[in-house]
Length: 81
Image (tube, helix red, strand yellow):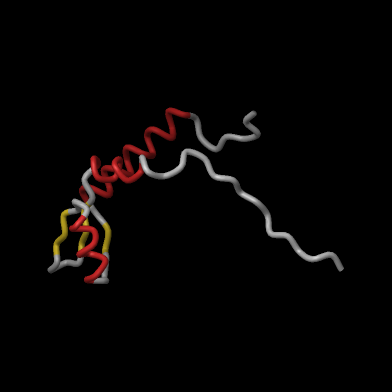
């Protein structure tokens, strides 16, 4: 049962494709040398001089596949007063 939907499936696809393009072409500014090293170990292209990490789409998809397909959101509970 679906209670709400933020985007249509075609819109989700467009956002995802644009995100992949940004991660691959623009990349991320990663100031931590240790983090850049970890990204490189997992297939990212790292530009040490500019502290830029670029993630090829296949790498993003590989690790995205490891994320559970659903999550459960719950509100915080407060003790009864």
